[in-house]
Length: 136
Image 1 (cartoon, helix red, strand yellow):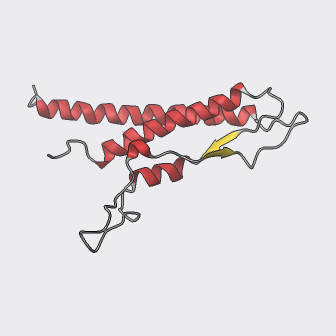
Image 2 (image 1 turned 90 degrees about the vertical axis):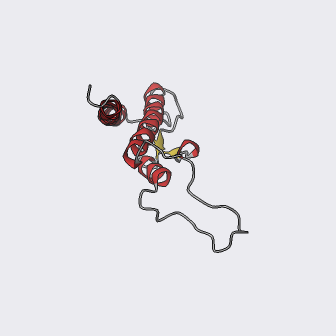
Image 3 (image 1 turned 135 degrees about the vertical axis):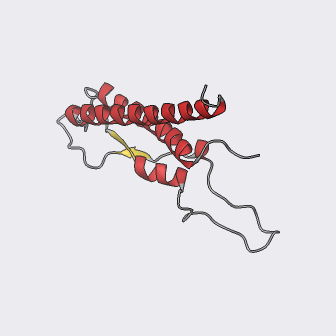
């Protein structure tokens, strides 16, 4: 059975999922801006997206014998980005490392990129609908 969605559609869907997670991480940082001792979190978005998509197939494995264990790319739905304490954060007097202006800027950028990916998916779905209805 063939897949009607191409690599671009899968990449956009993965991007939306990762952007939603980035939104949650950034929102959490902003919500904890006044929490003493809170360390801002950072998400490795680009690395996670690259691992999830593996568009060029460079990270895929192959077997030389049919009796070897099956190998292949990691399922996009199972890919999780690395979320860690932001090492670039300046520590305030209360031990908090959240820079609210930086986090708000990151949140705005992420929202714009999310909306752009969503619009591209909508256009691809409209093209599929047009093809399915034979242009009617």
